Image 1: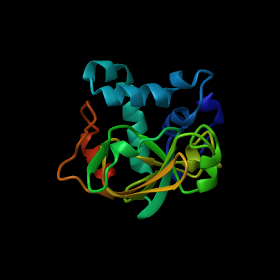
Image 2 (image 1 turned 45 degrees about the horizontal axis):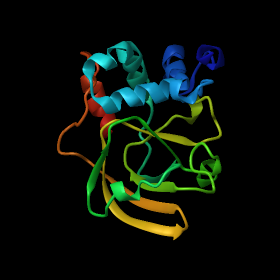
Image 3 (image 1 turned 60 degrees about the vertical axis):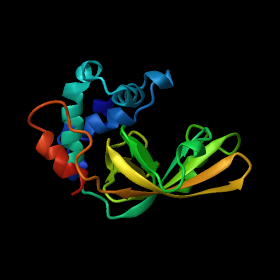
Length: 199
């Protein structure tokens, strides 16, 4: 299906397979927790090389595609989670997101109950990002203005705000780690990944 949606001449000088790899990542499957992005990110969190092995070929194609996309200039992006995570982000601490993290430049996108919604325990992350990749031209959801942050993204918690019942806003500022925190577990793309991280 991802290939069927991919134009013969994708944007950003990507090949059809590279563009389709990004599109496949963004697609929702009938069972949300079985979607590719959900299973891949869960496996990344577990940090088990053997469990990640079935994804190696896909990751190589996916990261090659992301490396070709221009790095967006520093900007504020948003990420919504439908639970209260404020206790995990005390101001002044350094946090690391070990997965591919979907963010958006559009707050209206987050009104969707899948991302943040309008009721119940919620956390809205405001991230001063420095190396996001705009994947809109290759996404299944072209209206979501999605910016993808890479695994190993490190941030300092600047502040917290509780503007409404059950709503917490966490302000994060991305920093350049002293060393690359996560390298692809296969040869031939490590240097590309290192360039991708902060270029």
